[in-house]
Image (cartoon, rainbow, N blue to C red; front, side, top):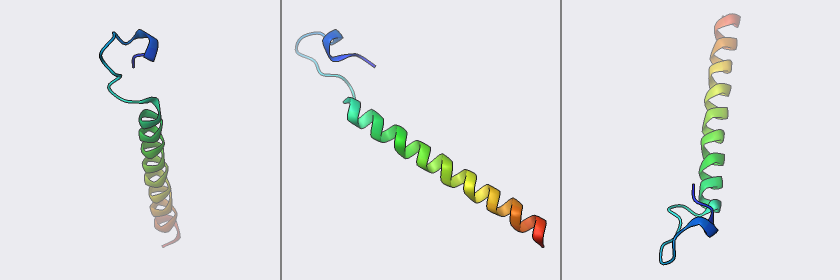
Amino acid sequence: PWAPEQVPDGTAPALPPATVAHGLRALLAVAARTTAEQDLKVTEGATH
């Protein structure tokens, strides 16, 4: 991840920081949802 001041003239960073942050939030949301679903399955398995 290049800082803007480190990028050579005439080029732009591959991903803007906002895009990277959005992607990380999306990954965290998917991971949290997956974990919640697994916990729910474990709970259902214990009650039945």
